[in-house]
Image (tube, rainbow, N blue to C red):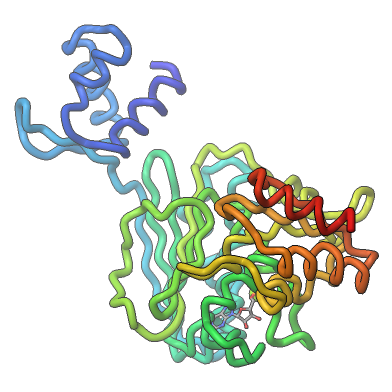
Length: 334
Ligand SMILES: Nc1ncnc2c1ncn2[C@@H]1O[C@H](COP(=O)(O)OP(=O)(O)OP(=O)(O)O)[C@@H](O)[C@H]1O
Ligand SMILES: [Mg+2]
């Protein structure tokens, strides 16, 4: 069995555990017996398990490693959590994947230590033949409320927009506001839940290991990465650096985050909310995906007023609909 075939069968099972032999037979143009033989081999290797028999048999990816540790926050260090709880379960993964995990786990544990005020920090890991998922949870103030309070925001949803921009910290004496920005971009899936809000990078599809009611206190971070990912930390850092420099100089902002449900982006105040802290970057890519149209005052405030006040920051709009582009051109041409 080639690695590609193995991966493809495992992915098919991860998507849907029912009717697998028939689906594989159809997909690969082989007999059901051959498909069943593949499944028997994967089962023998330990990567998959099944329940039920005959036509009702259902497959799922086996759990190959599972860790759960609860630490008192006082006196905790992120390196210790990495060394004790996480690294041993990942020792055989490729170096680029281990480096990504080392970075993201220590950043998120450091956040729980430095920002949450929680009594305890809980770390869980779940690994299967395709992916590893890590959860970091605390029972502190909650990230969105903390940011809302510190930045004096009207709505905790605005905290999500600020996090997406990057360089957001409520403790500038000790931090730079890079941890969540880069951790969310090195992972295949990254999700922060706090209160009733989610900050998501990629779709939410993994099942939640840590059951938590919508209004549980504190912050839960979920991170998932393919065990055979080719991504490297360096390439992600480079994507947001200025050419020939190593600093965090560029960001990509999903503009739709400034648009709350049922709203349209029309006003100068919405534009000011969007452009807040943009001057800390040399380049801001404005991703208009999901934004149908924008109003003249909004466009004027972003592309003319902000730009004139901060000419050193380049604004690069992408994914514009014809209606958005028309408004953009109208205000930049004057
Ligand atoms: N577990 C948490 N509980 C409460 N607030 C949090 C938590 N994690 C992060 N935050 C808030 O989110 C902000 C952004 O976090 P992020 O990790 O991106 O930056 P930082 O920790 O401030 O700086 P850096 O990671 O560069 O040291 C923090 O400054 C803090 O206000
Ligand atoms: Mg941090």
